Amino acid sequence: SQKIEQNSEALNIQEGKTATLTCNYTNYSPAYLQWYRQDPGRGPVFLLLIRENEKEKRKERLKVTFDTTLKQSLFHITASQPADSATYLCALVNPSLYGNNRLAFGKGNQVVVIP
Amino acid sequence: ETGVTQSPTHLIKTRGQQVTLRCSSQSGHNTVSWYQQALGQGPQFIFQYYREEENGRGNFPPRFSGLQFPNYSSELNVNALELDDSALYLCASSFISGQGKDEQFFGPGTRLTVL
Image (cartoon, rainbow over all chains, first blue to last red; front, side):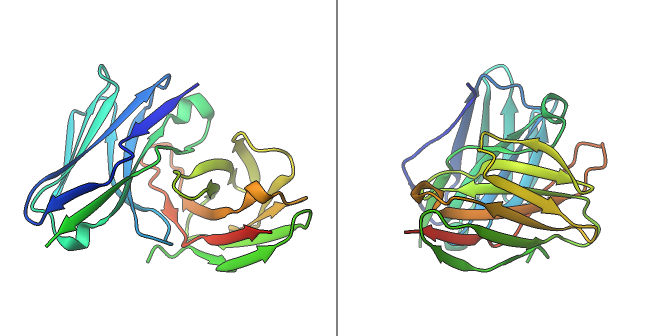
């Protein structure tokens, strides 16, 4: 069965440093991968999408890489700020496989930015 | 804010009861998906509705059912509630254009507690 793995341990990082999160998957061939941010008691908020034929995507202080050979995506937050403290979820999508854009989520990885 | 609203915010039910959760999609969106998020887990796909028809279902029993209305609002119904149904229920709206962008906009969720 498909597996989407994110580090279960919270990432504590000093303000100004780069936070790097990992998403590994098995038994899945995503057409694209999305990253979401979730604050406690709130719904996930879309951050970035990267397609299977793209290596890297950037948006402001965020960077995502996607390696379909390693079956891995890395998510980077540069110059991290306390306001970046949240849980970050990776989600895989394959519309042609399922006939819809259902998201298959990992468990999420909590980031705590220390002032 | 994503423009997706859900009601109620919180709900407490007892085992065996039935519950209806409601979602109002973002204007212009033709698709609504429902997800269940247990504590400490990523959201799990329940089902999706596209133009009022079910368009894919996750690994959930038939006592989970739904509806999408012409105005693209939606309901999730759960019959014969079990303790394990306690979770945050999220709806997400999107516009399927066939161009693979498919960013999903999540509501704030309904926290269901089954006693």
